[in-house]
Length: 351
Image (cartoon, rainbow, N blue to C red; front, side, top):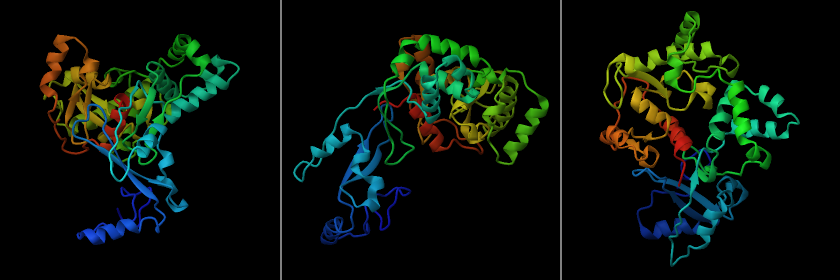
């Protein structure tokens, strides 16, 4: 509650939250309708494998147009049904929602639309940028289904995924093969990028950009050599921030260290060089991080997704000691919570 809420504030309900007397607080509640806020509903969202985090959102039923940004109708049908089950006598209702796979980003949706609307799929694929191609490959390997919740957003945090278009679903394997043939240039992992060919002049240029706080690497420059050069400069900054030591295992042998992107390279060209979008990891945990088997919460607590780890007893034994521990904090460029949220949403969006 705040006197002047907006979609940019954490608070949604208009009013004075400082009252300590019951009567004054009840009067404040009675004023909601006159302020155009309608009936407020508080939603608490618990994401699987986030044992210490509860995401709160407030919505308003039948609000004045001034509060349209928080209208309950913005919530998905499953959530609106919950609201109808509450009353003054029973203020609590809950349900279990499911989702799996990867939620489609705006880049993916746009690329898929162009492919499905094109009379020649091959031509449409050749017109994609490397960033679009990489994001589309990542999505089509595990298309999302169900209801997703993006904790980095506010009232528009819900994403209901639509099934793949019949034409895309019927030719999924062929489409993936065509995309992989067209876009083999982007190193699939940060570890591979660190071993890729580089251009010394490009590496130096990227280092200067990092020093200047300019972190974008445009899609148009995303070639094999540029990807390697950018990774080399990015890795130097990230590893130095962590004292050339894995933030999880403590391994300090440099041949075993990787500067792992939190928000993947293919997902956001504007932060590809941002050291705060990187963590120094040793090879095993880097791979687990890449696969979504290892997650990192906003407070830097490590969570292992045992369902993704599977029944490999040796791998489980390697990852077990880190589950519930906190990763090391770098001297500078600490991971931004918004980046960590985007990573978890990408790999672990299930409710």
